[in-house]
Amino acid sequence: MNTLRQTSSNRIVFRPMCEDDLESVMRIETRAYAFAWTRSIFRDCIASGYHCLVVCLFDETGHEQIIGHSVLSTAAGEAHLLNVCICRDSQGMGYGRKLVQHMLDLARSLRVEVVFLEVRPTNRAAVDLYDSLGFNEIGTRKNYYPAHTGHEDAKVFALQLNLD
Image (cartoon, rainbow, N blue to C red):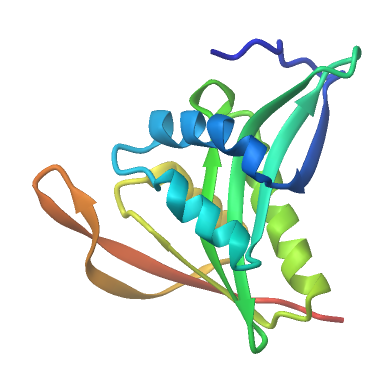
């Protein structure tokens, strides 16, 4: 499905997600997660004014390919990183790290003091990423995620942002 060959000359851009992006977003989301968000959830996040972004690669001819997306809600000096997803073909190339770092920079620009997120303990790549970015595990949400055999707990992480 990945039509843009990823090379060092590709330019990565983060831009606001719009309704026209939802077909690509849903294709990425459903291939990445067994229990994916629905189109209506993304539509509601956009309508609610959450910070919904897509990650795009542009080749030397200007061709755009959406390779990921993220959703961040903010209120009262706090943020919740609700969704981070990179398409399977682009995982392991550092795009997830760049996306989370971009969302953290966005949170800082909005004067957010702490960012929270939940992650499946079985998603080792994501747990390792959040650990490496300085997130701290602060708790567990029991039976938070649907699973093939009932539910799975969520690890709750937080990151205190330096607003200097």
